[in-house]
Image 1: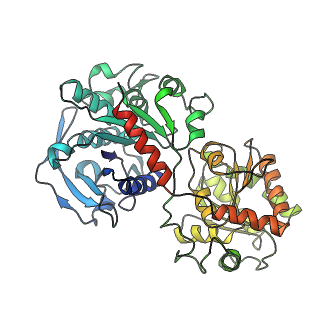
Image 2: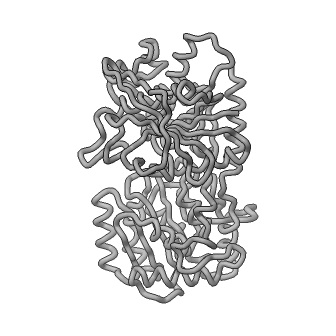
Image 3: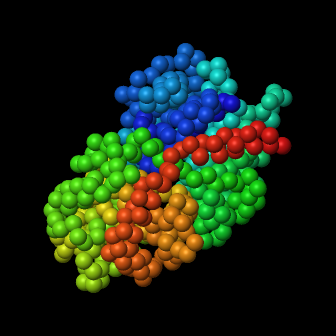
Length: 484
């Protein structure tokens, strides 16, 4: 089976978040199953240092009245043999950011998305390699299924190439104007309520949902949630209509990159079967790094997050003063985002410098040390398609405390009657009171060393790799190939 991933980013070549991580990891797991998988991605400015070879045949993209000529550069995904095709169109992609710069989103983002999709359909002509499945990721690649359908409707070739669309976060839909749609070169019949039109505007993700043979999202619970008005972001009707073709597949993490026994960012390795010494050393070092009280007795709660409404960290900010007054718990917080949340966290840290350590920004090494040094990891998301941070935390022996939503509900097994191997805490409502109750429950468990040690071991032995997801995607590709 031959599969082409289409994505605006792929780690380690270019990454802005979880999308790049998935597109950089899942192909490796599929390759291990024997799938001939390749990736196509724009050659952004940050990709210029990547070793690559230029294909001789040119690439052509038509965007309205403008015609662009570029090329395909071929590289490899990290140290693997998985090919990565980089779209060399400097006019569209040679910029300081992937989607935006200091002035905001690039105004020609819809045209940049159309060029990515048009280039994906020229891979066969330029390289001689033909995909059985084109697998698009998120809104910027979602129109590729429509281009594919339009192209194949003009041909009688058989067998048909099929398409799969993965929705990583439904909140990001690629909403633009009808004029932008006219620059796509897609058939005018593809505009309308059963195509790319949504509330009078161009909605790239909706068009992909309407045209893809199969649709996946990144956890089983999220696949159910997005069919409801609460989580559907206005597209719940389209997702209900395509419900028979909508599949939830839980993301994994790269166990080689996230290995507490070998992670050089940690002051001491953590051995999953015997974690006590490693966790103690990492906790002690983390407290020193934040210049906090160095007593190891109080429970240490960690946070690594973007500070936006989705992530629910305002709920923690709301109850932190009360936690300082009524408990001995300590907190280390790493994140950036909304200015008001940043200010509130910095103010609390200044008020309680020995119990709340805060770093506004992002530091990958520090994130890893928080996962390793904390006893508990807080993730009170209002919605969470899959969530990677809770899986990183569990991999490093930090018990997650999270809201019961999306992938958090699928990865965390709470302490409950009948649960044989619990590994964390879940609460239902996005409220400060519910988070407060879960933190108090966690503190009670922490005060019972034997019970706490068993839960920690459960988190460390949790299976978080990509193998199961790769098998499910391979099955989804088979279903797509058999689709009517």
